[in-house]
Image 1 (cartoon, rainbow, N blue to C red):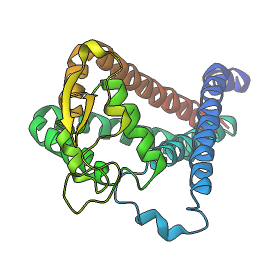
Image 2 (cartoon, rainbow, N blue to C red):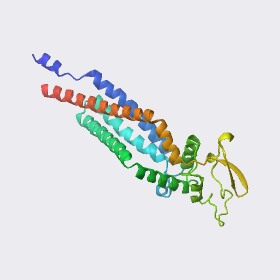
Image 3 (cartoon, one colour):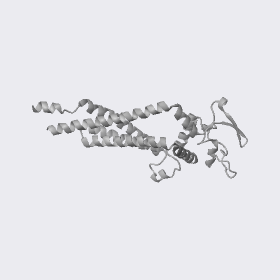
Image 4 (tube, rainbow, N blue to C red):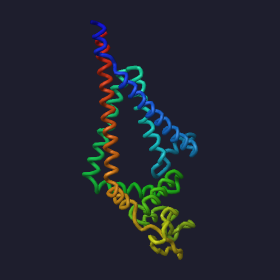
Length: 258
């Protein structure tokens, strides 16, 4: 009877090793993201001068790698070790942490839909703040250039936003060679779609649409794909929570049968 009782509460090897395999990949990706972030900071000398973290006026893209990598590392570690060692504390931590992330994503999505105008204003403020810091950090510069080239835009709402940058503004006191100009990423690649402008006796073909309206247009054009990605991520999170909770129940049932 005892043998039959034990088998009725046996830990599922399929669930156990599925969670382990999935999370070890997740954990390795987290390590890779953290490694890239720390390497980027090392190249910029941030690790040798930690106080320089607060010196940048704009957004440092390295933070994305560090934050995302840190979350993936912690989640992957808890899920991987929790499943392998049948540690209910780590598995419960994995479930709760994943649940909190899911709740935050859901809340952010609802708030973004309800307060669309406020989000638009904050995005405008964010872009303009980073325009001011364009030359302060090479990673930020590359991110802005990629954004403007990908969405074929210039500035938050137009090329005039680059007047906020000390190197590109058109004031008489500006000694920069880039005075009254814009970054190369604002220049059109297709002459047919170019707009003729004249600044400081230079004829330049630049994008006239801002990145905020271009982002809105891209979001509307790709709404199905974006929604599908978010729904897929949400379903994976719910699936992960259910699997972890199922494994916890199996482990506790086996221990009680002892």
